[in-house]
Image (cartoon, rainbow, N blue to C red):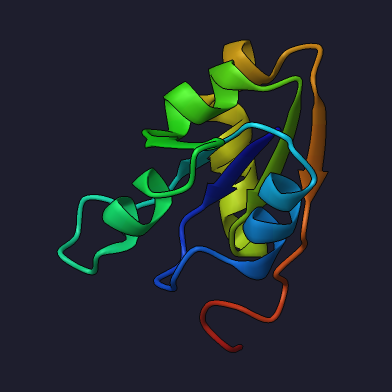
Length: 100
């Protein structure tokens, strides 16, 4: 299972539940390079790895993408080769981003 998350938050509860079930995850996020401690927190989980979104997309058979709805087309363009033939779960964060 790959978990890709680009919002500014701590590693999410779903990641912890997936790990608790014994599944190896790769978490990618724009915050992992930030001094928020998120990378260190994920590194402390024995079944979790952290890296770039491209690495995460290439890693798993199932990819969970949690980004604002407007970003999904770009995810498809940027990572089409890595996502080909995989199950992609989208959390549909349609309420995120600029209001119209």
